Length: 141
Image (cartoon, rainbow, N blue to C red; front, side, top):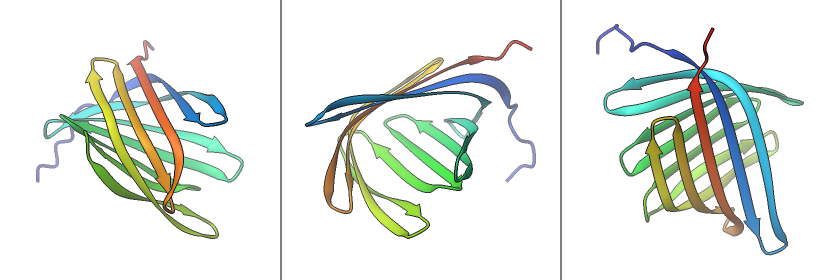
């Protein structure tokens, strides 16, 4: 492995998640500053968000037909995505680890946009259909 890391570009990132459930839908929006880099054919976004429980570090990795969201810190989560496949993940909270399942319906990645539509299951119970749109642009300093 080479010690040369790819250039990390400062980004303005907007993460919009719409959760569709039987009761209706809700949208959560997060605006953060982070970094973008490419490595071994995949694109990565890194950002941090500060919650009541503490700081959460998030890495979003996107490659053709698959993606992975890793969160560490106050919240630990591993959510893998592969188009038209069911994949197991995990969500760790202070009181235990939950098994999650994603069934990815759409996974699109273009310049400045990551768009993932998936059915989400937690501990075997359907938790709704999630639509995550991550838009990002270079932060002009």
